[in-house]
Length: 122
Image (cartoon, rainbow, N blue to C red; front, side, top):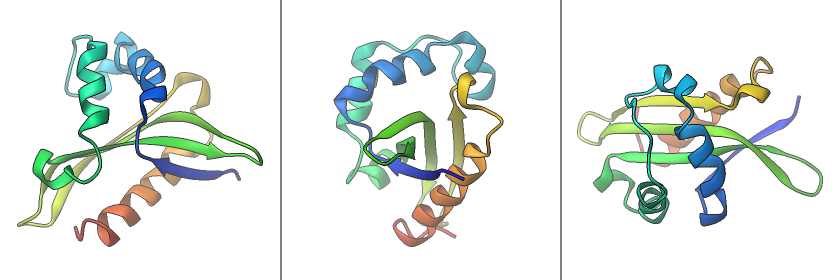
């Protein structure tokens, strides 16, 4: 089984994010049914990281770690983060061509570990 990684989105991930977020077939799995502008996604990338609890959202890139590089296959989100009650909602999107390989389950395990150990959620 390949090693799944989670990484903060970087500006060079914008093209993939835009492709996945603006695919109408993926909208049934999320909270939005409108396309996201590149500017909106850029703002999301710029606001990720240390501001997670203020923004009440964390978006991470799901990757498959190879010998020489990581191939990004989807997105993992923690949103509606509630620090007081120590909980959050989760969402995982794996690109169509990478589905049915166990990536979402392994990404969820990594996301839970991050939520429990870094954000102190339960």
